[in-house]
Length: 253
Image (tube, rainbow, N blue to C red):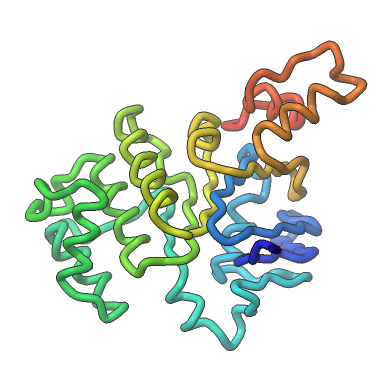
């Protein structure tokens, strides 16, 4: 049985003045798959995600979400997508429960869903704390909770753990891993942490200079890299090794 693709990107191009950010990208994301979109700074990955989100419009090509274009289907598509960005600003003097209640109201959801989310993100003890008093990791868990409030079938996360300490980062990972096990949500994750991509994602897409260099499962990518003639005497043991060999630089450059 053929797997349903919830997102399809077909020959998409996007430029900003003299910069060609995305160059003819094609990408298919099946239902329930977690995808890591990797690339150094300036690779085009954030622009790509913003076009999928509907924030940016392609200059050329087509993006469909559950078979539908953004134009004319904005309300329906917004209702099935959850977003979490690198930096999320909250109202300092709103409590955790009040903040989640505010976002739940946008989807006509009530207290029951707010309580579910507080449990999912592990902020039971902080439900009455003001946003300004939360740690960085707690704030980011609340951001993930907001992204999940509407039970999205598609989750788009742009570097959700950047700047967090290792423990806080792993707390986010466990939330997302549990989501993967209990739902059919599809996810695109941009990250600068190779370990994060390996731990959470089924499929890896590596971009640089606006194009996709390689894509596949981690095992496929490492086996393919090792089996090429120019690399027959090299052993790409990690995703980081592969990334450097493809781009010539570290992911955070």
